[in-house]
Length: 233
Ligand code: CTP
Ligand code: MG
Image (tube, rainbow, N blue to C red):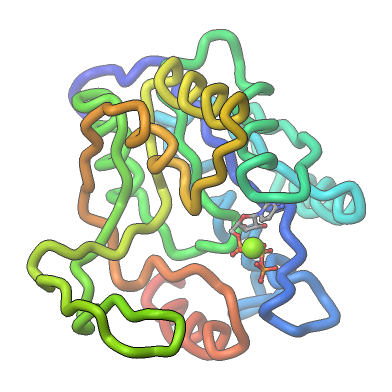
């Protein structure tokens, strides 16, 4: 990175229940080649000098476990834990509100996405600095259609225009803070962070993510994760 990005904060939402994994342990503590999902995610950010602080958002019930995980990692970088909420949006908002007053760039990245790379994160930081708001994404591989409630096709969308978006999503701090505050006031719930910025009428950019940057969601993802981990360990 050529230019100093300013103070970079990362919010890692990790306060979910992992219900779709249907496992007795929360998916973020599942091990991929011996290393818990959440530990893998945090380590990628911890090893990037451009990142100044990491805020891990946790459920009360996982607090002790996450503290133990962080102390096992022995991180030198400023790392904070804050309490999450009942939705991802609430959890991320709590994280945003706990950032350092020095924060210039804020990155949001799912705790359950352990295969993010330094390259993707640096692209996201650059995108945030240049455009104000950006997210990682990849072109969709399938043809995507819209349908009605009975499953009948309404329309076939033009694949060349469709992107599957991921985290990291990175922003100028004042932009994401305003977007979250406005969504809160309007009681608007989006399915990702950048959509809260889109609704402010701000142009948002997609930067290259990776097909490996999967979100661990269901059991099959753990099988895939084991294969992907072969390339990263
Ligand atoms: N998350 C959060 N707070 C919530 C819900 C989700 O911090 N109230 C976090 C999760 O821990 C995860 C990320 O947001 O790292 C993405 O959410 P998702 O994949 O949906 O995880 P869960 O909500 O835990 O899984 P599920 O929806 O299957 O219960
Ligand atoms: Mg969820």
